[in-house]
Length: 247
Image (cartoon, rainbow, N blue to C red; front, side):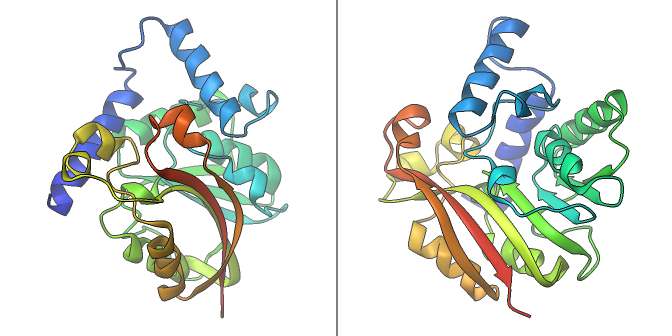
């Protein structure tokens, strides 16, 4: 499947999520399911009081990050703004958080959440994570939650991340990686493409791409149990990584 086809499948799927066009029966049902998933992947009850949780992701990048007051933080694939709002509390008034997402509906929803809840140190930009609308060496910390696996060009994503980070800047990623092979049917399944599986690559390949982009990295955690809980037993894991710009 061509890159543009993959992107269109992902974009359409997340556009529907942003507009609340899911199969869940009621608003309360949706909220309960979203909170259940968020707790399962590492968010606390206190963090869940923050707006923007859509029950998406495969970990909690805020929990593993070393965000401090005054930092400029970038979220790759910011969705409705949940992780951005959590990060904004850590950077304080002296810092700033920027969310980038390719889905206009997600950007609008995130902006609405920011305005409604008075997050004045958060900004959202429409763009692709393979071609970030961010200037060189302006970011202290990058976070990303189960998004890079959706990109057809992961190396370009990591190269862009390297470009925008300041010297010794850090990237904290929670993502899905494969531990075995997918069938051709699985690779071309639209639901698995949008569901963070079909576009994922094997763990060693993922780490190799990070290194090829110029980063050194540390594996902080690996969650294999998530396969049974969220991915029907497919041979994969959620990996949490700290990537550090070498320069």
